[in-house]
Picture: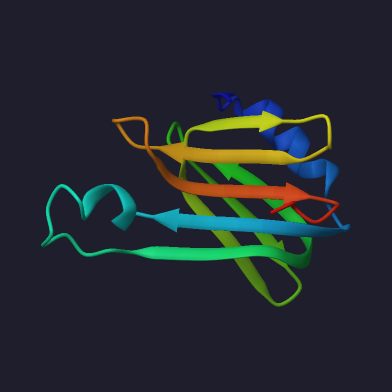
Length: 116
């Protein structure tokens, strides 16, 4: 993965406008913090291969970044993104890593389902 370049990521986000795409969105604090301090609250959210169509996409911030995807009836929003990769399967993979390099958030977009 590379550090996010807003111009490049915006161009990739725009490629998926008004198309049915699959979303993977994952956040976690528990996997990395609970083993260090049992009193830390575990927080996790996970969706995978959910079909959506978004009509607007925007990346904002100065790092870590925020990405918002506007749907017909709501929004998908991810904050804390630091890195991205666009792969040979035309998938936009974005992730946010904490100061120790551990995954804290992932937002991925693809025209085809993500493989398990």
